[in-house]
Length: 242
Length: 336
Image (cartoon, rainbow over all chains, first blue to last red; front, side, top):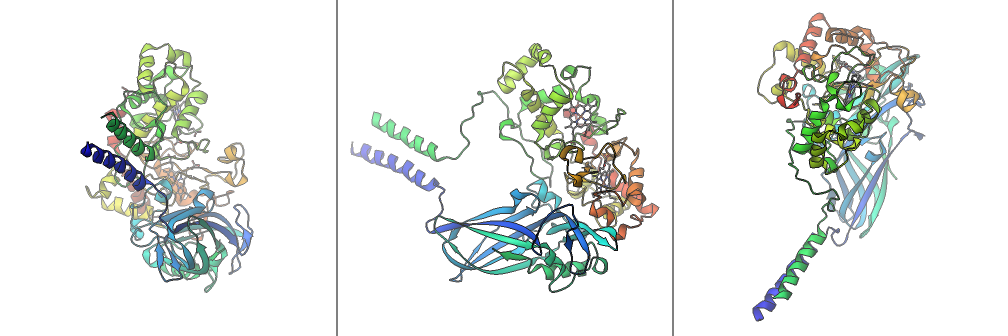
């Protein structure tokens, strides 16, 4: 009988422990951060189909496509610890569902900086390695030009002395990965989700620190290292946190 | 001892309770043989809805239906216009080019104007209900079909839904990923110098084909106006579906897999050879077309691609490496 009791105890304990173990609730003391990406062109709303924008070099332009990757998110705690994520995020400005993403299980407390890569960190920027879905597959960067993925496809049409010409700001290759650091203080609260908005000013691609001129720098940037380098420099300050 | 069992039962109950698996299916228990599709290397994940997982029974039914005129009221079957030997397209002389049935398991947008973007099952429903206007009485009076549908879906009465679901399974199995290009990527063969040069043109800014016909699918699943025309009068492309002026002139990018087997090219079949298509991209683009894709009017393309005859020949040679004979002759895809 004694044995029986012990067995019963064990048998009760196992399921209880199992139940405990399989609970998928966040670890104690952690919270979440949900991000939203939004767009503006020097404050104006992003629209297709209209020559509503003016680049620093003086070209009127319209936008037809904005697709890009963000990766390597790092959130800096005031105590110096850094929360890191391995996620590679595909974002299409015109597909709202791709413009929100959440990081879970972040230690609570005050944070001082949000850092991430514009593009795909070199560990993941390998041809045909992501291919988890069609959107990502479409971003592939041909092996003929170094392989991996397009970090960005920013396309549209500009007016060159009343002539309409296309532009395609494409960024790729590991050396053009942009490491973005944004000072921002925010809190992660236990069992709570903090909301953060990353707002991209698309016109910043064409200025600060360098003026990008579609005609002299090239209305497409792919396989043009100097053009991509310019975009890389200009890209460091395209985002603001809100 | 009884207590003992209760405890065990309780334990199992608890373990069961915390599993986050899908709730038990409401579908009747069926004797189904699950199958896994052989997805070629480097291909993306295929979208397969939970309620239509691949099974031997449903796939076999889909294949049979594809070839059976019972679905139509005029003696036609799907295979009347979609021939396996031509990569599941053909030239029946219609004003609209027959789109090929290949790798549609990965497709998000269907038909030239993207009339459907609700997934394969839904397109099949459209084909059955609207395009073929299938008379369900006919199929319901066929004893063999009755039994097959009962086995595959557990239904006593066959509806368009089950027909669409089985057809969708057959479409998912129509995978082409064993062309010479694929074999080259898998390091099994090497391509000729001409093909390699053509590949270079295709995948670089020289030809700039890859931006729309890229990745393993050779289509971006999107819509573009490539500048085939400068005005759109009656047929306005994707605009006819969305009503958005920015969609005037846009059509779905067809896959280039097995393109060399086609007899007509572009949504209206205006070209009859790949040579003509290449010449169009090289020198025939109407740059003043409304909503023309920015990639077609990059300043360096002002005078067309300016490819030499040799470059055009090489590009053609590369396009031909996308032909997959093991697909067009696969006995699993033929009339059962």
